[in-house]
Image (spheres, one colour):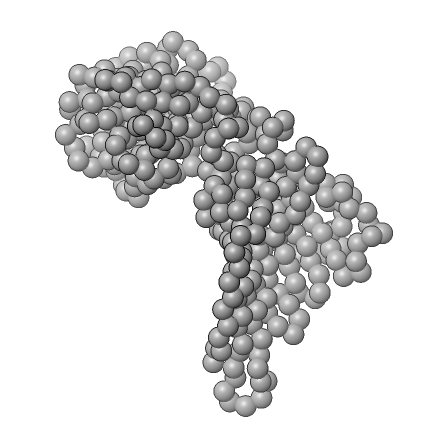
Amino acid sequence: MRTLFKILVLLLFFACKSNQKENTDTGVLTETNQIKNAIRFEESNLNSVKKKNNDSILLASYIEKKNNELINEFGDLENQRIYSGNYICPSDSSFIALNFFGEYSGGATYNPYAENIIIKNNNLITSKIEGEIFRIDKLENNEYLFYINNYSRLSNHIKVFQSSFQNDSLITNKVNKRNYGNYIFNFIKHKKEHPDSVNIKIDLKNWNDSETLKSLDLVNSKIGLNEYYKTSNESFLEIEIDENKKIEPQFIIYYKHSYGDQLEKFLRIQNKDRSTDFILAMKGGDSFTEKINTEFINDSIFKKTIVFIESNNETGKNLEFSVDSIITTYKYNKLFEFKEIEKDSIHYIRK
């Protein structure tokens, strides 16, 4: 019971949201018979936990159950164990998919892997999908798209399956992932950016270095007098997707310093035949304060908010500030090509 309590505390914040998962763990395709046998589930065993009406308790019960099975088979959890899990539901909440993340010993290293089970109408559904289910899109005619991450210790592999339920089985067909949802959105590390995100240490003597100029394809002689650039080691995505180098855009985060204290955080989007720059956040300004916040709302909508704050009078007891906000909404695609679709503005006086 103590073990179960600890697991429940860790999973307390899990919630089933449409097309989203509640943590950023990833999974791996299990290829060895040993693991497949050790992580098996039998429908008869579902009865002990299926009556629990809380998904977190259901998940925690299965994590404990799986580890108990490993102990029964191997004597302990030293060489193989399940250490966490999460769950995900489609928009219609018609079923729940449980992901389990573990590791097993492979000589001198430990190898991560993930398994999943699907529960519908309190029944365990037979499925051949292996790895972590990180996204589910609801289609017409009770069909679904399952987005899977089959990862190993060294790489991540994304697959998409068009699926439907038939009796107690899940019928799946692998489809071309490039024809479906923008799954890269699911792996964006910081979907919201704000001025506090611009927290790089400013030491301008180390900016405009050769590595930065090469990465951004800049020529030192053509850079403005007060412009300084610096690439960042920060990753735009939570994971590195192997196929990205061939079929998806590459991302570079870099900073630009100019005009005294103005500091901007940019995203360089590199496709095969072109590259574009898109601002993520900004702070600073000279006679006024300018701030930029951005957010990836979903896999196709991006919003940018620019806030200008300027003093109306610098003398007197009642200092007033003029605040102007410009909110721009963009539509973007899988190649992260942005198109402006709406712009609003707000003006008010702050005392």
